[in-house]
Length: 224
Length: 201
Figure 1 (spheres, helix red, strand yellow):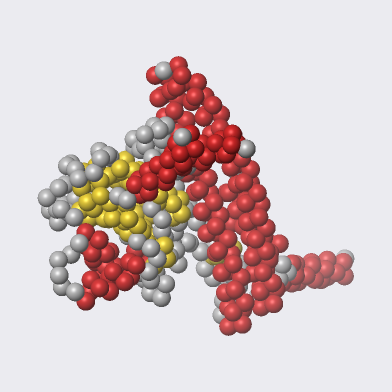
Figure 2 (cartoon, chains in turn orange, red):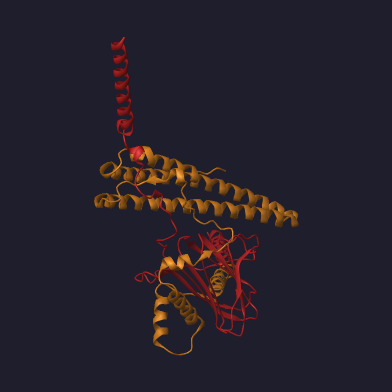
């Protein structure tokens, strides 16, 4: 009898888990495109899914490229970080071999690498700031909400300590990633320096690239 | 042996019945809020403008007053489009998008006379969706599309226009040549002047 009860318990669990998923159906890969194809070919009544895909197509028609779509989009949250690519006047670097086609070819590869690192640094900085704000907001929210009941307050203290510890670990992760990107930045600047050495200004890295490198180190160094 | 078998079966049953609590943003202290993850899948890989990832989900909301969903893995360099389409346009549905926690709404709206509401934005990481239909049951479709990362993201150049300052590039001799020549001429003139005075004496 007891054995039958245990088996029934397991089977009940299987059915409950299955039932919880019935109300939500997510399209698998490739299904959205197929649906759109069918929608274009048929002229019958639209389901809500067809209307959703039609709305997306309408959105695509308005914009001519991904860059346009990106430019027309604002940040979701008001206080969300936007990437900062500005450079101080003192750190701006001269480029001396612009008219030389061979130099341009050398420059293209090196500046692509430089711009990639700049994108990653800006993203790293925004992720850090957003996470920091999120944590502060969560802790403030929890501190206010946990005062309602003693038991809730105690449970919150444990959760709070966990959040703080996790964020401290995140700071270490940021510092490690920062070091790695600084290494890549230095490498990209030295590559530009080599182009300048061949076609333009000798000692370019020592005179200009290094100043920019120091500027970027200070800009993205974590100060808290 | 029988005793161990019973323990194993009991544990297996408990694990299946236990609700898995997902670690997800927005932040939440309420155990009753269990957001459903909307998984993004690849979309139109060959189309340069529309290429990205998409989630299309049909929902039939019958019991809960509010349903919670979240989408993960977004890039701040990619445009994101979200829409909700109601199967019955006569039933208005309120929708809220949340970033940090479920009490702070970053975007909110209601389906229009066609049963539609949409918004586009950019964000890093994830965001949450709250759906509150005015009547139940309510059937609707949620759609999230996230494009590829844009190439032009407003990155300014770190290079100065034009070439390096000429004073900085020349050596000492080249920079002060005329001063040196002028100084030598002056010395010669002084020498001749002094030599002439001495001869007169």
